[in-house]
Every structure is written in structure tokens, then in C-alpha cells.
Length: 55
Image 1 (cartoon, rainbow, N blue to C red):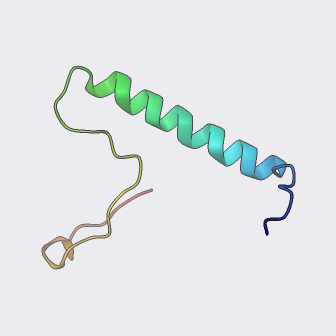
Image 2: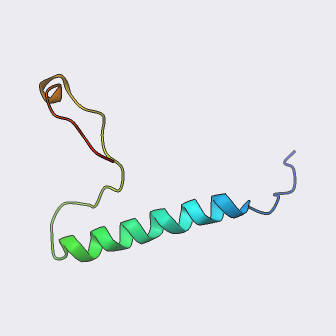
């Protein structure tokens, strides 16, 4: 049995909107392109150990 879904919290709405805007910007920046857009950064590999990331 499932429980009724509660209303999303304001910060959840804000985060979802931020992610949607980032995805839309990524789509606009890379169009036309053959690779799909990725909003998140993958974790660094061993070879990236010397690279500092700024988020």
C-alpha cells in the first residue's frame, strides 16, 4: 500500500528548477550535437588526481 504523496518542500522545488535550467542551458550550448547532455559531474578518475575541480 502506498501513502499519499505530500507537497514538495520549497527547497526541493528550487533544486528541481535549478537542475532543469542547467539541463536546458546545456542543451542550448551543445545543440546540435551527438552526445547527450550530462548535468552532473562524474567523479574524478585516477588519472584526474592532479586536476582541481571548482563546482
